[in-house]
Length: 159
Image 1 (cartoon, helix red, strand yellow):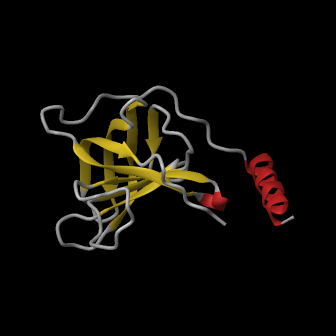
Image 2: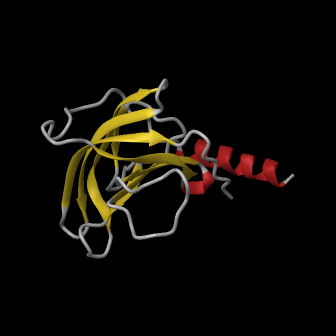
């Protein structure tokens, strides 16, 4: 019964508010091709209204196992359930996700504007590659290529 109520609430929300369109092919080119791509992981997460999301953790120390520890260099949540190739806005009113970055030993700061682009998803290796260009509220600008491993067994229950 409770699951049916949640489903009805989600349907009402989608009909009343609509969903942002799924981004098309990537716009732009990878950032700083001469730099090595940063590594990390991506796992399933919860989005607004308990909808699906993917959490990208761009940090060489990241792992598919949840481990408490220091904040990661960059964490981006995209409100999608499958890593579609495309460009996603991660700040502003019509965003498709949000991010937070930690630079050095300073406090973390939320994304103010920018894009997070998935350039490819290799199903054979579970590797996702792309690039980001994100302005943090602290004024720091983060630009880099990334290559992350998809934590295929990750499952987060929302709600």
